[in-house]
Length: 261
Length: 328
Image (cartoon, rainbow over all chains, first blue to last red; front, side):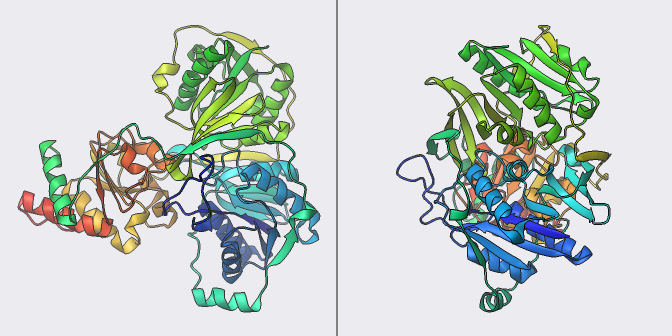
C-alpha cells in the first residue's frame, strides 16, 4: 500500500489570535503554527497501516512556518518521504491549497499512484470548503470523511473504512481504491516521538521540495471575507475571581444556593 | 424554477435531523429577504413520509432513488449537480453534521461554486448573500460574502431553534427522476455504540474533562468530584481520542447531547463541536486557563485557572460543606 498524507499547519488556538490591521484576516506574524489536529491523526492512521500491511508513507505539505519541524517529525515517526511545496502566498485558502496540492500530486512522479490519500477530516480554518473532498474532486478519487478506522485490502483493491455518525454510531463502508479519506481520528492516539529522534532525522534525512511554479493557481475568488472579529458573545460567564481555594468556595456557595450541593 | 433558495434535508436512520428544521428556519428568512421561494431538497428512498414535516418550505423537491437510501457524499453531490441543471437557486444550505459533511464541498468543487463553511447565520445584505462564520475553534468570527451564485452554505447546528423550522402548511412537491452512477463507496452496516457503564445522558451532574486535564493519571481528580455530586465524568473529543475514556463518555458532535442540571466543563475550550452537545445544560460552570476560551461565552459561571489546581480545591470545599470525607 502506498499512502500519501496531506498535512497542514494551522494557528495554535491555545495562543491568543490576533486580527490583522485590515480587519479581514489573522495576523500570522506572531502566531504559533502547529500541525492541524486531525492531520496528525491522518498521519498516525497511515503509519498504523504501514506497520500492519507494509508499504510506504509519504507526507506532503505546503510551505508554512514550522512546517519543516512537522515534516521531520513525521519522518521520525516512520514516514518514508517528506515533500514540501514551496512558494505559496501567506494565508492561502483551503480551496487554493487543495488546487495547488492536487497539481503537485499530478505532476510529481513520486506522488502519483497512491492507493490511499489521507488528510484530516476538517481543519479549524476550512472556511471555503474541506480539504479532503476538494482533493478527491481534483484527483478524481472517491471520498469518505469522518473516518476513524481504515483497513485496506490490497488484493481486492478495497478498504474497509469506519465513519463516525452522531450519538456514537459508526458506519462500516467498503471503498474501492484508490480513494481519498478525511480522517477524524486514528485507530490509536498519535504516537509521541522524542525530540532527540527528530533531531537525528533532521541531520540524516531531507525534505524534498516541489516549486509552486509547477502548479497552477485557481483563477478567481469565489468568496470575500468582509471582516474578521473576536466573537461577540451573546452572554458571558460571570467570572469568579481569586485563588483556587477562593473560587472553589465561591462556586460551592452558588451551587448550594441552587440546591446542587 | 427560478428565484429560489434551497435547503438540503438531512434525514438519517428513518428520521429527519433536527438541524434540517434549523436550516429551514434560516432558509425561510433568507428566501423572504430575496423575495424567493424556499425549496427543501429531499434526497432519499421511500422518504415521501417526511414531506409533510417540511412545510416551512414552499416546495419540496423530492428525488427517490435506491442509491439515496443512505447519505453518501458523492451520490448526494451528483444528485444535486443534476438538479442544478433544472433549477438555479440563489443559494443552498447544507447541514454541517457528521451525516452530511463533505457533500457541500464536493458539490462546490464539482461546479466551481463558492462554499462557505461553519455558518451560524446567513443573510442577503448589501446586494449579496453573506454569512457569519465561526472559525479557529470558536475563537474568531468572520463575515463572508459569496462572489457568485448559487452559493453553498454549511450551517452549524444551533443557528436557530428547530421549532422555528416547523409549519402546519403542506408544501408543494416536485419530483424528478434521475440516473445516478453506482458509487465507489458502499455502506455495509451500522455499528451501534456499546452500552457504557454509565449513561451520561441520564446524569443530573456531569464533570466534563478536556485537554486541560493533561493526562489519564489526572482523571481521578474529576472522578472524585463527580462522585461527590453523585454524577459522572464525561469528556470532549481529545480525551476520547487519547483513549483515556470510552466513546460512551463523549459529549458533542460525534457523541452524546446532554442536558444535566450541572455541567462542569474542565479544561475544555468550547469549540462548536463540543458546545453542540452541552449548551442546553441548565447550569454550566467552566474552568479554563484561557480567559478568551469560547466556553466562557456559553458558561454561566467561570473560573480562570488550572483545572489541576481548581479540582482538588473544589473537592476539598465540597467535602468541608458536606462534613464527610468522600474522596475516591
